[in-house]
Length: 185
Length: 286
Image 1 (cartoon, rainbow over the protein chains, first blue to last red):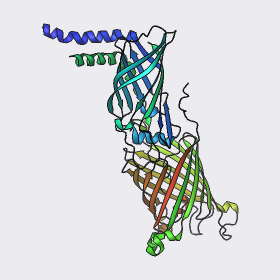
Image 2 (cartoon, each protein chain N blue to C red; image 1 turned 180 degrees about the vertical axis):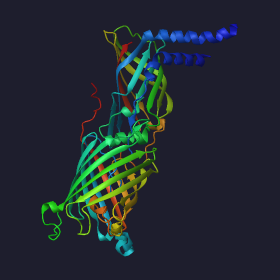
Image 3 (tube, helix red, strand yellow; image 1 turned 135 degrees about the horizontal axis):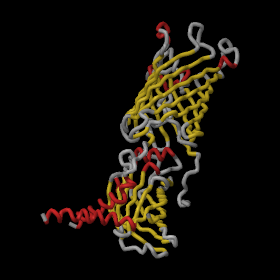
Image 4 (cartoon, rainbow over the protein chains, first blue to last red; image 1 turned 180 degrees about the horizontal axis):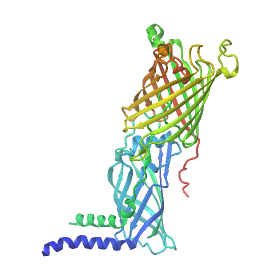
């Protein structure tokens, strides 16, 4: 009986805790993610303004980001089609995810500018990899948070194959930039 | 134990906070890349160029393949060329101008995507409507007595479905009206059904076939042949190359449909898409 109780206590406790956590949760109002591939012959850039969602929980220091692949907009729509059809296979893997933990606790209530990093798992094209993503946090006086940063992804690491017969040149490392504002909810 | 706890925290976390956001059902998305190009080989597919994109296209058809090695399978006979320029003024509509060497045809067309297939549910097919106006510059004083005699009109409705990542199929209906009939015994208006299938063999290459099937009185049937083509498309990233064999005599739609003297000809199309829209520029967010 006691053992049975013990089995139940933890989930209940955690669920209760999780509900309590919501108070320290900040959701992204706006999150813009863009990437830039700088190959010798061709520079490719794309931006995602509508398909991103993210939250940060300062109680557990956890971060979650979800990016809808289809919402990356390219100046050249043929490239966008190739990106979705051939490289990222967005019908099979519609989202990229990041689940992470802040590396150090973060003074999210004191206005100022801070460096911040999160360590976690980045899933792109169905392939998960451990990553540390760093950025700069600005706590605004109205308790909004502004986050900017950049990191690099190697398409090969995520099994994104670039066919040989190709005139679109794609860099070995793609630079990803993000800019977001978070608000308490 | 630690990982178990971690998982539970995440679970609770997702149910508590993520749930409300993640549980929102995604709206159906339009299906992209039913076909690689706006044309399959001789005829149009349901695709239009993306909004504010310009497509330039060159089509070549050589002589009769059956001439054999002596004429290098028709290639020595020279090619008839068609140049096309199409621009998407609207996200779902394209306007184009074309010039065909064979028959000295100028033509314009309007192409509108009426319906788009969506995934994972919603609209099962894409439907596109097209109208062409043709005018010839051929000097044939016996046949063409006035400018209006030189005009022909073609309308078509195309219904396509992408069944899987590899397989797409198309059905269509075509009507052609000639202001001047080909001969006294032939009608001014003609009707066809068309069908096309493409199968993607690699990420960059497909094989396809298309055919048009004339619908009219049986006694005329011997004078007109179904026009078909088979071929392969190769997408190089910047261009789409289509290499194929067709039995169609004539290169513009209004003449290849009216194939009375079937040939077997090699040919190829090259299309290139240019973006005329300003896109997101790197580093200028906000």
